[in-house]
Length: 345
Image (cartoon, rainbow, N blue to C red; front, side, top):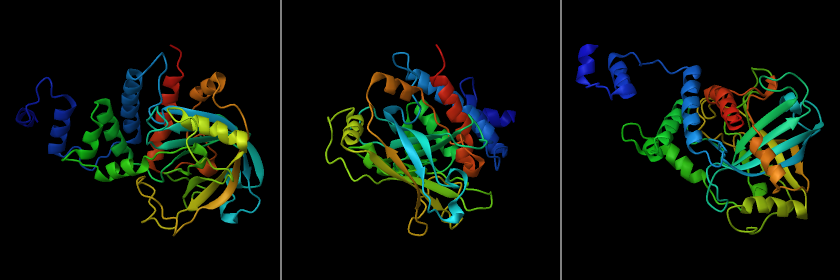
């Protein structure tokens, strides 16, 4: 080992890089993927460093979906006519749940710029024990593109490392470990939008629905309002918030919640979050309708509550258990990030 160390010139500044090279050379790291606990520990450390560095006016930003567009109160009505195979968890029987929705931008503070949009949903009054978090709540987290730009938690950690170093493009274009598909998805997924209520959203990652031997599923939320925003409202950095308010003053907003069932392990993988499940092969089935009535969306109190809110895919009934390693790291990473944001100074 000493000879190898000298060969790699692992001096005082060698650090983790030199250690990694030594271990790789000796075969120690071969076929030994990091555990979920190891991934979570490093992600949490790096995300905390990044978000504290980006703190402004005493506010610690979210690592992802950082710009709060608006939060709204809504109703989530589960339909009566649902295929028997989908009648599990909150979809087991017809019911209407109070819902709290957060609309967000992934990275941009200016709503007029291209970005990925986020939609987080929390149902309340949900009966039954939960996997994690508070009793009585069920969360669903979605994005405006049907896949993530990274395939695995290892890839996501690599991106976090690059972001902490201020070298995000090095993650995509590293000649020794390029992520060209990730770059293609990141560019394709970013779009200009004029209203979050006219955007379609996807869960991107899979979930259990009912017993463990049932097919895995993904979720999608699709606009179903008769009223659509035709042009930017109050164009500028808060135009999406303005568009929500203008829409609700005209008419309630309608969103359809759908479920897609996995039909192939090969073309619809659990462990590759960058793969889009083919809707031609497995179409989404509408199982619930979200209705958003007119309400204030831009006042200081509403926005403050929105900023304090936190969502987690593991805030869930067993029937909707998150699946895959990407979901496995999200529980503790999201929880730690929310704790950091809401921690008293």
